[in-house]
Length: 399
Image 1 (cartoon, one colour):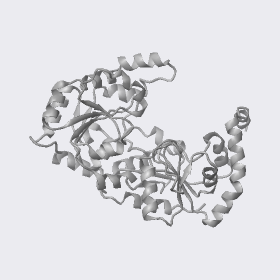
Image 2 (image 1 turned 90 degrees about the vertical axis):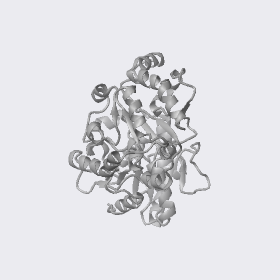
Image 3 (image 1 turned 120 degrees about the horizontal axis):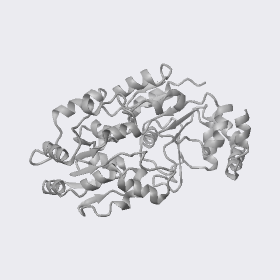
Image 4 (image 1 turned 60 degrees about the horizontal axis):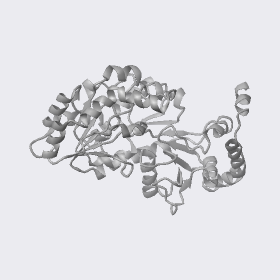
């Protein structure tokens, strides 16, 4: 109780505004619950963007289950915001607060929740809506340790898994009650199978390193830290590897580089790369890139599983494996050397050899060996993932 009063002492203008909005919308929300028989689903992804599992699941619901009262909260400045769709709620507006209070189920993709104000609304959920079901659709399949996904951390009623080995690992090690963890596949997997293509380009898409960019340092210090990192030195070198780029160009393939969102502020430091490299900007979604790529070159990014679901070739450039495991994520059930759906390499000579091994003289194509690994990881391989997610949520009892 002391901690509650301590937090009340830090009330801001935005907090007061949120409290007033909750008070004003409480009665309309109650009426809304009665009208809809208490079955509203409120979905959120990111405040400012929508292109992932939450958005695709929302679109599937609107098309295939229009009778389900499903709503999506999104900032009006977001590219996906559509004012003509009454089921898209402007973030922080009257209707967002009303549907937040009226919803029977809250559905999220990442750590962002449907709450208009996380700090204030956390008290609402703690004291007034303690049994509100939370559904975690997830952003990516976890391959690392279980620390961030434990039940006491997430506190969700449904934890969606994208693959069978992930389901086995989470359900056995993350402390969830029986029936809380579901292997349905990710919502966006439906879209992958339906719209995948061969855009004849190689996508270089490395992951993030939490230990490189430190909030305790200044901008200049972090930039220097980034420049001195093995991450920058290896990928900057790869983006200037004329042997690799020449080979791919002669084979009829372009090369695209997509830096992690957390590292976009460092993109300007890659200033001397080969001019034939195309830097991916925000005009194209990651989802669309993955559907069109011919070959993925990554290190540890979970986007590998989207590519694996499409059974496309990929290469893992892991020059810093020990450092990554010690400072970023520990190893979980997934061993790259044992389970990866593509060759694992440590230097650019090995990377070049791996690229050439996938080239048949005309096209870049996957091998049966790695396709079998894809099938093993995804024993359920179809475009019914959204349907399974829908059925899992429908199965939640109305507490």
